[in-house]
Image (cartoon, rainbow, N blue to C red; front, top):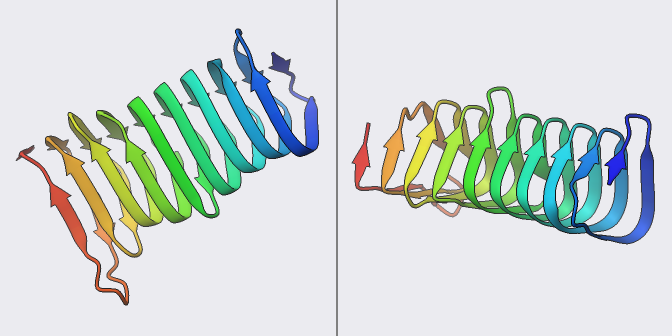
Length: 181
């Protein structure tokens, strides 16, 4: 399915897409609830929804994907070169996550990332952030949390800025790892 550069899909209810082909978006998709199940999402436009549940082999976001309440992405690979966010909660489950330089994955509340390999060159930011990178977390960017940051990884590489601002609940930075470089 192709949504061209000036194309718009507006829906005030739920939009469910089950595709055997790729979703290529260069325009705008606005919907209350987006459910996608397919091979690949290639977003070079805007996807805005209240809730989003995406399941694909590959998700490639070059522009803007925002879910107001909740966003759940499940894919073999997620490559973010734009803005991927939620005003409330975001959950990413993937085999490989790459957040490019100048890109941001942001949640104003909880963010959880479950991926054996996380490569962050940009910004990962949330109120409470949990990152489980079983194999390796490579961080050449920023990881920021306002009320508690939990990192679980066997290996952390090139760790630049990892910051947790203590909250009134006294939650702190928790890092579990077996080796760092």
